[in-house]
Image (cartoon, rainbow, N blue to C red; front, side):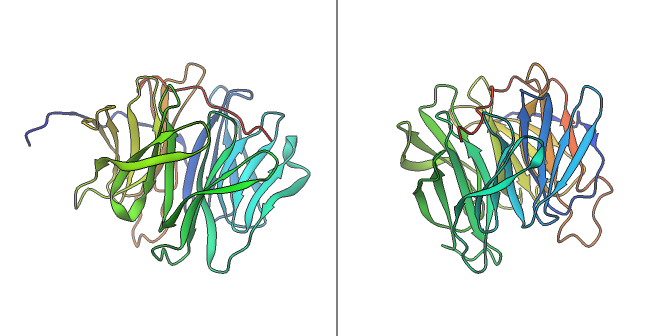
Length: 289
C-alpha cells in the first residue's frame, strides 16, 4: 500500500458477555460507568471499571442507544421512539412516540447543545427506510437526514463545527457542517474499501481524529481530520459495532461487539473490549431533557 499506518492488537476484555448486538458504548462521567446496550436483547448494561461492578436493565422494546440525562437517568432510542428513564431506572415515560411498522431506533448521539440526534432503520435494512432526527429536550423533532438505510455513527469535531455521520451500506464516513442545530453540506470524509467491512459506530477524539468500528471488518480504524487512515486496531471478533473513550481521563477506548448472524462466533463476540491508553477522548454532553 502507498499509505503507511500503524496496526496493533493491543486490546483487553472489559466485559465478557454474549450480547446478540452489543452497541453504543457511552462514558457517564457523573457515575464513572460505561453504558452500552444489547439492541436485540432489549438490555441496557453498565460497567464500572473502578470496581468491576455491572448492572443490566431490561427494556420493553429493542433499544438502539442509551445516553445519560443531565438530571440523572437515561434517554433511550427505542423501537417506537424516544423514551426517558429516571434515576435508578424508574419511572419510564415517552418523550416522543412515533411507531412505524418494520422500523426501529438505532444508534444515537447527544449534540453539543444537549439535543439527541437519533437514527432509525428498517429491520430489513431497506434503502430509504431510516432517518436521522434531532430531538430536543421538550420532544420537538426535526428530521436532519432522510433517505437513509442504516443510520449509525454520529460525532462532532472538538470545536462543534463539523459533524461526522455513517449510513453503513454506503461504506462512507460523511462530514457535514454544523451550525448549532442543523447539519449542512454533506460530503464524503473517508471511504471503507471493499472487503474491509462496513462503517458502524464512531467517536471523535480530542485531536479531531475519527475512530470507527468496522462491522464484518474485525477492526477499529482512526482517521485524521483530513481523512487519512492513521491507525488500525485489529480485533479477534468479526463484528465490532461501536467505540467510545472512557475511564477517569478518557484515555481508554471501549469497543462493543456483536454475535448476531454468525454461525460460529468467536468466544469474545458480544463482549466489550478495551484498548488501554488509546488516545484522549472528548468529554460527553448529557441529554438536556
